[in-house]
Length: 217
Image (cartoon, rainbow, N blue to C red; front, side, top):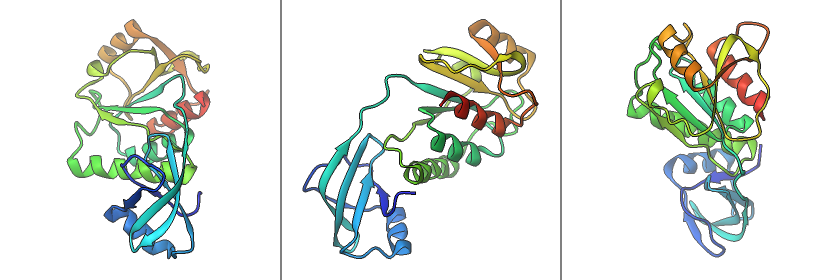
């Protein structure tokens, strides 16, 4: 894990002073960072700032490193499941480019409260910092499977499908809930894309999501 790495939503510039948000202040206190320690700050937009504390919760940047975005997008379209926290954390670490969440017909959850949305965003930021990424994958919530935008190669988890093979172009891979997709949902997905088998064994929904991103990486 990168040492002394913090998050801001601001754009980073040499000479700019960033005031840390409340959550990052707590992180600063836990690490007991001193004024002599170099600090890294990221904004999830491909920018890494190097700097030092100049005041209690303020970082002045002396160098900025920028990273270009990838030339392709691998999106995980994840139905709402109980272990969504785990899926967000691990797939961000493994390099997913975006996360689309939706309630499937058999999902136990049919929506997310504002508090849950904030928690998932916090988990994604923490995972981004932990694994050294500079780009924060967006997390978007849609009202149903059919409302998820399909602007890429469409794949979906299917224990009876062909073995999964990584694709080099933009892709979106759908993972169903614990009880699986209904016949109605499968019919929709089959008309839009292709079913793929992620493992010889039948995987739990959260395991399938993590395996899919890992195989595509």
